Amino acid sequence: MKTYLDCYPCFLTQALKSAKLAGANKEVQKRVIDRVARILPNIPLRSSPPETSLIIRNIVRKLAGGHDPYKGIKQKSNELALSIYDLLKKKVARSSDRLLAAVELAIAGNIIDYGAKHSLDINDEIVKILKDERKSIKNENKAIFNYADFKKELKKAKTILYIADNAGETVFDRILIEEIKLQYKNKEIIYAVKEKPVINDATIEDAVACGIEKYANIITSGAETAGAVLKFCSRRFLDVFKNSDMVISKGQGNFEALSGSKRRVFFLLMAKCPVVAEHISSLGAGCKVGDIILYHRRGNAQDKP
Amino acid sequence: MKTYLDCYPCFLTQALKSAKLAGANKEVQKRVIDRVARILPNIPLRSSPPETSLIIRNIVRKLAGGHDPYKGIKQKSNELALSIYDLLKKKVARSSDRLLAAVELAIAGNIIDYGAKHSLDINDEIVKILKDERKSIKNENKAIFNYADFKKELKKAKTILYIADNAGETVFDRILIEEIKLQYKNKEIIYAVKEKPVINDATIEDAVACGIEKYANIITSGAETAGAVLKFCSRRFLDVFKNSDMVISKGQGNFEALSGSKRRVFFLLMAKCPVVAEHISSLGAGCKVGDIILYHRRGNAQDKP
Image 1: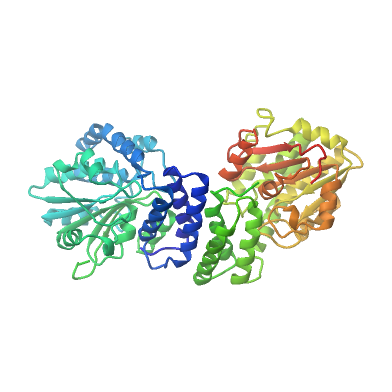
Image 2: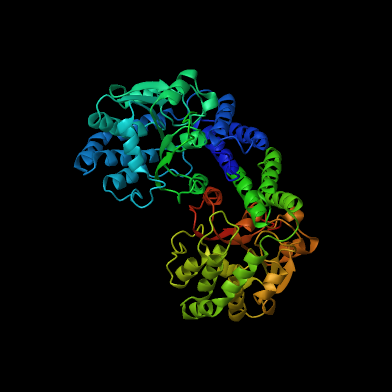
């Protein structure tokens, strides 16, 4: 996804928020804003938002110090999600279509994103998820919730690359991965996280804390961007991305980074900002903020990145 | 009020919104964003937000053309407010304290602000006002709703400067001005509007369209800023500001511009953004977004600007 004009004010908001979280005083916060404002005119519209987020993060790191501002938030997210693991499992067990329930939970888990513009009340949201109050549009709009294709591809695939998004959300990913392992034998799942701390995105430490390593091989994207921007990814990741039979991509950052890729990808996300919702709509699928999305991007004939 | 760090992203949002309203194409919108981003590091924290808005408006005017982007919106606001004039008058007539009802309506009329960040649904809001659903904090927190002082000063004052805010809101101002004229004889009211179009602020044309001239002398602030930033105001306005017995200031823009002034001012506004709400709280009065404010700023002993 390219950068939209409405993203520019949001870049400044993101910079200020990160500087505050990094514990910067007002003076340093102002310097971060000034530095980011100065580089904004150089951000081309054709670059994806995660590329700019990387530049912003480097500025914050340089001016406000190198520690990980989201560390505490990530730990809290992991703990919060783990504390409802049993409830989530029960919810899957009670469902008439267990895989569908696990897919929905994996997407709903994407709300655990303290880095998003409008921070939702997570406790409330989890209660809503558990009570089925959050309506999914799964059967009403196949263009943005293509479960049939997802299931078909899943059946065929031997190797599956699962590109992670946020800490905490990894527990919801685990629910889906466990379900895939249970329903289909001999699936190899590779779970890709960030190599270094990036906003509230999951790292190896978070994946292990959430117990993913029992069900999948954990690798890193090699990129320091919020989404897996391919030109910054490691050769190893690119090999897996290219050669896996199926790619599942979680969250808005990875959607922004990979929606222009040429290979077939299943994007599982919740549309969190108007710009992304509009972009998804422009792909031929009506979408509004808050929608639960399972978007099947077919890629080109070669199906390669 | 000084500029807060949270205002900087908002300046970019404002610039983009104005460029869109001015009918600029995407390319020009991007140039507006770039130009505003470049000047942001030069905006000192000590300047008030309306000063920056003026700079932004000039950039939009230069790059996107000179026509008044808010003209249609202002006309619509005036017509909408005039269409409920009789209902507003009835509401005042039914009240046990007519002046208080008129004050509350004048503040509530401040929601008619298409220029604010989150545009409220005006029809809904007017229905709420008429149904008394919008709770005023008038009797609960004297610090931010000081009706007693307002009434006391009003009784004494012979000349009253009433600094206007938005188009449409002027109808609500007229309700209050009519009520003052009805209850107190021999009050001279001077109604100050913008000299040139500034966002959706009222100009002489709007004041006349709303029938203010029957009850008050209309002057302009002489400033092109969204709030009456004194250093940009005309000598005539400054004379009136200095020598009037009482000053009533409407809206957030004038609050931002005048809350640091040394003279006694009664600020009637609705807090529309978190930064202003926090600033009001820092003045010793608890305040949250959406609160109806009648703030008595006492000024210094000399009570002069």
